[in-house]
Image (cartoon, rainbow, N blue to C red; front, side, top):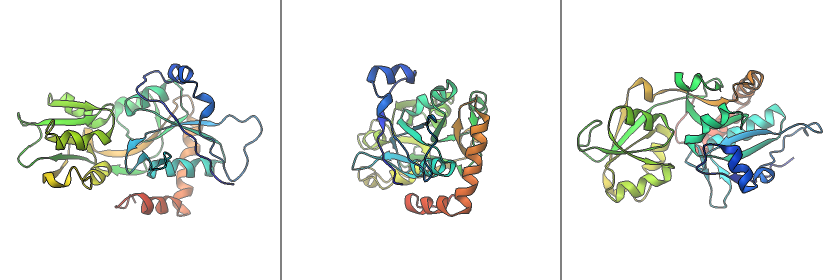
Length: 264
């Protein structure tokens, strides 16, 4: 059975249910079919994804969601033999929406920080991430001249703000190249996977930016999917599905398709 992809795009809302009703998107969500039909009346799982965080999750040239995390979400739902509805959200809204039960889980790469663990459940880690300082030569983290951009809701944004740095807040990683090339910022702080993609952007390549891995514990660690805190049984099913797609090679094939480095 094939997969039909229709995604309702909901941006900039902290209360996702209200926005869904106001935009009348609830019935236009993705129907992700599994190899085994769902039982009659079974509720589809609601899954949050991002649309501007390549190579993990983004909208491709045809307007459809793509990327490693989107592929993993498909594989997990197929392995669990459930239908899933994928909805685009802002990164800043993910934890709030999952904690409120508006989504069953998010296919979003999140560091399992203590603050987040107090609010949502997390799947087992599926890779280890570091954070990258990507800056013009001579611009060091914490320097008085540093003007850094980071994505709202990210561990990187939270860390930069906590350090008292001059921070420009953006909603999407796709906004970063224009800020750098236009001179509005001279550094960005972002996850490792995003940094590798950003380096290839035509606006970035002429700038001669330098890459530094930041070692602060708040900026590196195990990356997981978040799960509705009221549903530990679903967390366990997702963990078991992760194990199976790693054993049968699907996880590795998605890694090869979407990422220039190995996750395991």
